[in-house]
Length: 329
Image 1 (cartoon, one colour):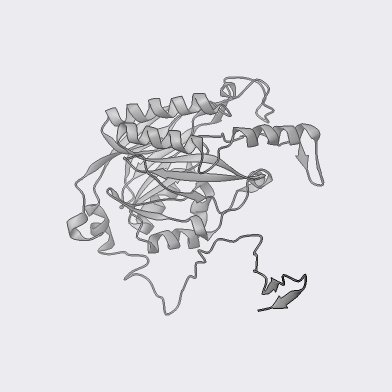
Image 2 (cartoon, one colour):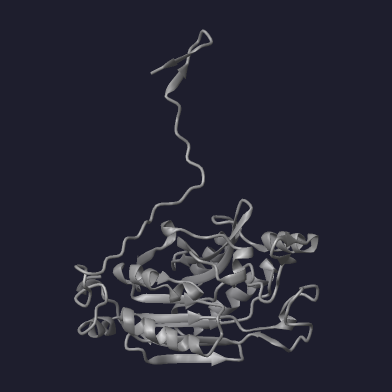
């Protein structure tokens, strides 16, 4: 971003909210309410947690064990698949309409279905309602691999927006040094980190990334109690509706690692902070991890951004003869 494009300081909001798990219509209504509330605080960017739309199945084992799956687990997966969204699709259109209705940039975690596979994704929207792109989580963590597929390098965008260079890294992808390096090399300035990790150590990781990348880090997590899930939901957290399943920990960090808002725990909350991109250049004066502080003569990273398709079709080199035979070109 050149000097003429540097924008004046603006306000970002991070949503630590409670969706209605697996209920698309009610969750979309909640998204709109939360966006309206954030915009009333002056927000020009609103960041939602991982899997806010479609649901994060915390505590569910999907009837699985090493070497077997139960019929109940297969039905649970089917229900989860039915709660996911198509990208593009009607839900994406509704989210775009919300962004347009409030004139705001929006970053939101969703569960995408593509044929029989589910992906944990982040979707990006512009203030005119444009769908700017998506990022599929590269590496589901632990038991997430039971229900989510793997993304590839074709959906790792850093978007050049009116607010700055915007991207997202989901949950424990943030512990993958090479992925972080790839994002830094793309010049990310507004580093969104939707997550399901509510451990107190998460904030320290976000501070490290902000200092390492000399970028603003906006980390967003859900606040969930057992009672927010359907009564029929099978959970390792038991049946007490007041048990906290996901405590939050959302925060906003500046390029020097200073906490501007949060971390917040134990409640639904909207965090806001001023984003001043001039602080990025101030920070990179003494540390630019993929610039003057790099050593490409010693360390190099190769990133493959091709789509990894499971089936490649090579067209036939033969033409069918009108007389019934085949002939080579």
